Image (cartoon, rainbow, N blue to C red; front, side, top):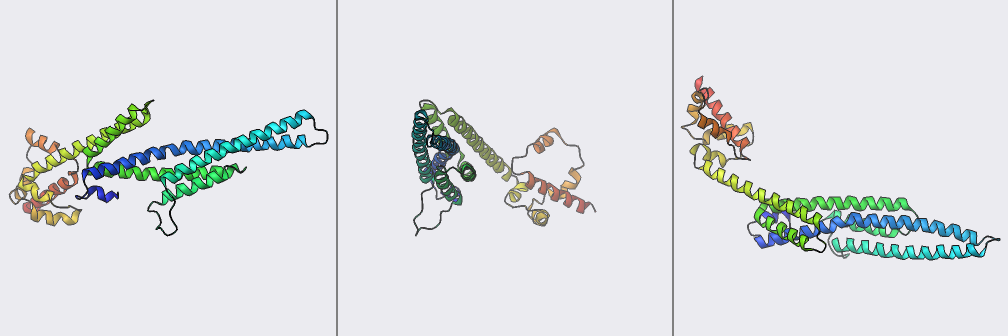
Amino acid sequence: MREEDFFDDRTSRADRQKALDETIAQQKQLSAFPQTVAKLRQQAEKLAATAEVARRELERANAPNASAAQARSAAEASRQLEADRAAMTAAASEAQQAAESFAPSEKPSAKPSAQPAARALRDAMSSLAKNASSPDISAVKQDQARVLDAVAALQSGVRQSQAKAVQADPLAAAQVFATRASEALRLLPPDMAAAESLQAQTSAALREAWDQASNQAARERLEQTPAFRSLLNLDVAGAGAAADVLKLMDRTVAPEWGRLRDKPQSPAAAAAQGFVPDGYEASLRAYFNVLDQAGTTKGR
């Protein structure tokens, strides 16, 4: 689902939850790639070391005065080399399948993927699997770095999608996160790291739901006041909006602001000014600035 679809009124809650669920699955897949490439690099380094040992043992066994023991040692080194090659082939195949599962190859006639990072992950993993069987460890290190860069880019995209999902429907998102956290705890053994992360995301989604509800309630209360009703429906964008605000604001308040500002504040007024709903600070500041300007102009 595209990020803008989360905010589309035609998108159902079930569809939003399904899309969010997919991002959680992607997050789990991506979290496994660093360990996969680290294992592949270790296998590559071990294979290179084994190949070097086998080469030296073979040279000794082929020497004119080689002993039977050296021949046996060369044969053993050769068997170990074949075993390490088989292990490398299996690890490389596993890594490629994981990358292909996350970012399937595209048909020649298909349009390019909308996620360049997904293609980068697949291509880097393919190169890593191919170079892992070679003695060039520097190439393996470069491919590992490319894989990790692609994973980081994809994880950033997943987090952005999850943030949009939470912003669009925080209660639905909290339900998804809580369900997945419960499932992680029911695993044998429990996936504590995933459960803790999902529980934190559940709490964050519930806080967002509370903030949205509080802001909406505050806005509805302010909209009942004539002096604020028009302001809250206006997108104040700097000093250029001052004249428009002045035209729209309540006429019975602006003329009196110049006299009221110098009077001692009552406790109730101070308390009222102390409560400013999140997100309305800039609008209210512009409103009172205009009131100040109106009072100053009238005083002249």
